[in-house]
Image (cartoon, rainbow, N blue to C red):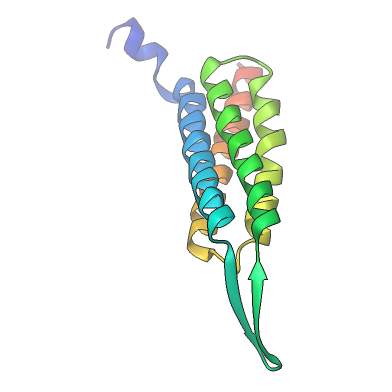
Length: 133
């Protein structure tokens, strides 16, 4: 194992993996939100009848937080110190918006929240090991 392999082993890979997860999750959010801005109407059946629900405003909010998560993921790739707090500030609202839209896209929500959560966990673990070491 040479020097470059050792430097990217173990905990040093965590921020890179977290950045990739954040970027992918943000892209999935942004693309699905973009489609909801175009075709964001859902039919909801209740005991009183069938109603159309327009998610246009939520789709724009979802697009904004998805874009912010992509930017945060790319910032984590740079390795700057401010990138981790930025990632937390972007991902936490994105998780909230995703969970609010859970009834309309449950599979995508579970996947994206899992990716976001895994990325945040990797960043926290990396931060703890760099402070301890």
